[in-house]
Image (cartoon, rainbow, N blue to C red; front, top):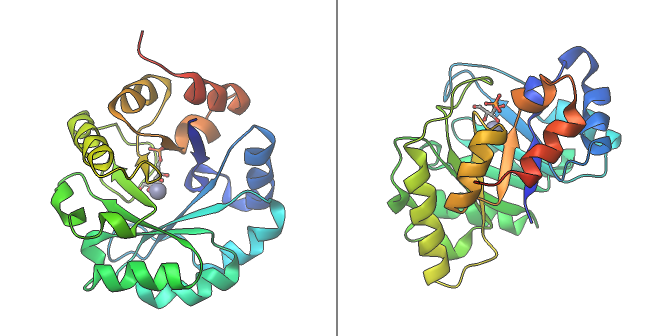
Length: 219
Ligand code: DX5
Ligand code: ZN
């Protein structure tokens, strides 16, 4: 089953609560929340207080994507704000293994994000410790960028490594430039969780957009 996670980065921040409710109404599975610090990525969004503010707008799980340096400093506040899953970037963690376990010790699901240039090998010794691997299909920082096709073999290789180890519960999430066409490609390559910002929130028919991601397949 494909998981669809609308990214509220593309929502209208002036009516964020409404746009979060919309995501639930149109059949989303998770709410994808992009936290950026203006240092790790060249953009700045919001922090735990905003996450806490929208917690009452939906019962869907909060899939928090931390594009910040020293993400370990935010974990307690994000747990209190209502995060369910927290994904950190491999390069943003001096001690990735420690941070993954800190997330899990809070009772949350732990993910690791890989930038387009980041090799899968950063996951070699933590594959058994994570709930999700996020393959960035654009360079992180902004919504509305174009999908990087060179990520398809990376997704395929990760799926085969997970299969070989029997780690079938680990999600492969993709983020960046996902629409009905690219969704079909990443699903075929082995991704099972799709983040989409612009494609959903920029659509005249967000309900149809979510449905098209769910049903996308290569002819
Ligand atoms: C980018 C963010 C994404 C972003 C995706 O750094 O991590 O979640 O919102 O936006 P689209 O789907 O518009 O490429
Ligand atoms: Zn994201």
